[in-house]
Amino acid sequence: MLTQTMLLLLLPLINSVAAGDARSSDEQGARWRALLGSPKQGDRDRAATKMRRLFQPTHKQTCHNKLLWVQPGISITEVEEGLARLGIDTTKQTVGACGSGWCSRGYRVDECYVLRVRFETPSGVVISSEIQEELEYIWVYPPKGYSGKWVVYFVNGFKSHEINYKDGKYLGQFLNYYPNGQLAYRQLYSQAGIEGEEVGFFQSGRINYRAYHRRGRNVGKWVWYDEEGKIKNEQNYPDQD
Image (cartoon, rainbow, N blue to C red; front, top):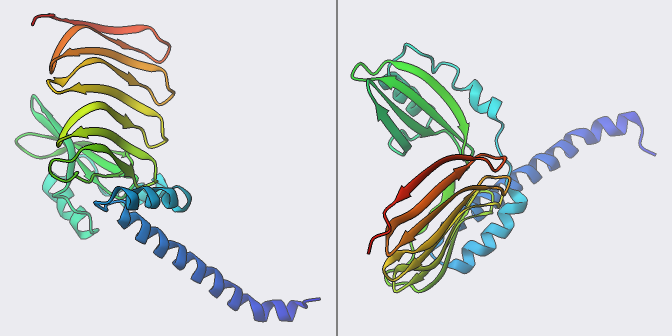
């Protein structure tokens, strides 16, 4: 039976082993994460299987705490300089937008979160900021002239896109997913372009919208729904050859 004195003597060793295990797990995660960017489908598939077990998401509060200084009134230049000091690459912005007298930009803070900043134009004064959960995916381009199924993944190991190619062009199903594995939307492609019905889904699996295409053009009635299945909006496109 271990005495209290023996436990105290063993405690540093136990902590050292635990720290070593944590470092080993982190190193494994980094190695498998890097393979998600492999040009070989088999490597990506194996890495995804591992990452579904190893991935540990960051906490939003941790992200929030290091960005408390991003407040209305400072300039967008000050935001980007501050992010750069934190090691955040401000040249790799996510999709932004502009309106009358304002613009917005998104900056990837880590694998899980994006900082979105809205600012006045042309002054550049920040109006608002928000940290949004947006899991990163690793896009890999297929080889030139590729034919077959091409799958890329989120950093947590779940599919982000599953695309069928023929001679380097989309042909067949184009599937896009949410980070939890739920299908986000489904499209179909013919040799003439996007074709037939497109269906979008909420993360719950309920239908978000239905749209239609013919030989790469928008046609027919497009319908958007709320989570309860009620129609929110409709738009008609001319069905012309």
